[in-house]
Length: 140
Image 1 (cartoon, rainbow, N blue to C red):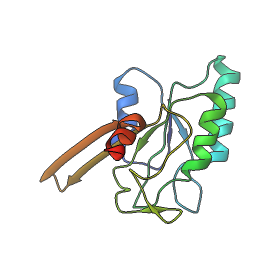
Image 2: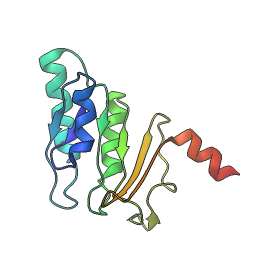
Image 3: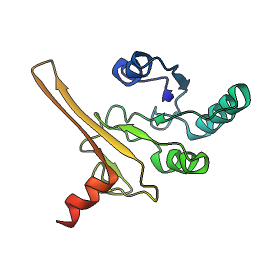
Image 4: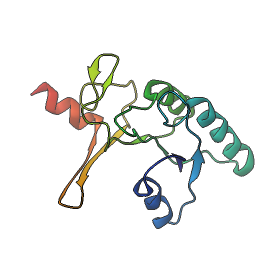
């Protein structure tokens, strides 16, 4: 599984808990999130070394700065790799003038969003949802 190198430990720990090996991709300087160009290189490197593509890509939207998610999704679509977004720190942020989280659609149907809230260990809130569920909720 691929995740970014600059992240909260909770984004990478589940990978090792499941016995998988995290492959870290460095950040790009605009958002400090996963670099789509380095993501593509990491996927090609894993295929070359192991003969297998990664099982999933886990971009993390840090510090209220959404990752370059459209470019990441384009790479994921090219290799048919599922994306699990860690959007815990993205609430309230914008992409292309739209609020991030429930208002951004992608052409692939296997994207999963993960939201959580942890404020000084006083309040815990988490949600795992899929694009199909989001569309159903928006359609009423």
